[in-house]
Image (cartoon, rainbow, N blue to C red; front, side, top):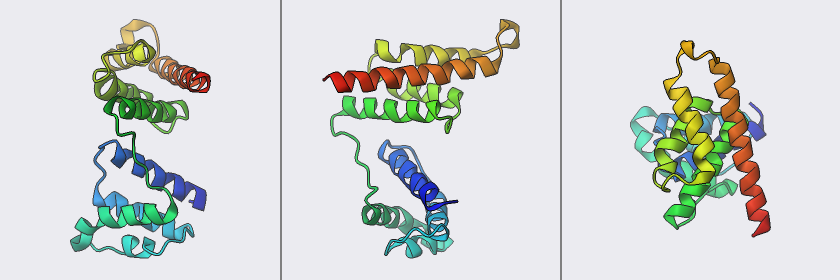
Length: 169
């Protein structure tokens, strides 16, 4: 793992936690260890990486301290709707770059974002992909790989429209 990979992993976990996704202390400690081995430098990183199992309750606070030291601390928008849209952007980005399984990503958008936002039109293609991937049967005559590709394309399209809308505002 390179320093860039380690920093991306820390940033990714920061966003997961900011969007109220559970991240176990063991994973926080492992990310700290990965970053330390990759050569990332932070005053608190060695403490995080060296936590023992009995010290796992200290991991979240130490992880946040490491993020602060590295300038990676992430706070979603305070407005709940804006936070949901930020989460949609983040999840769609992971689907688009294939770091998140399209079936899981589109399901997250469907179940955790679209519903809370009242099923906005912008998310409809991703919700449609979630329905198809969730209910897929071999008898449909379309492969699961094709449905996954459609989900990746829908995520890219969503992101392009969002970045265009933000540039225009």
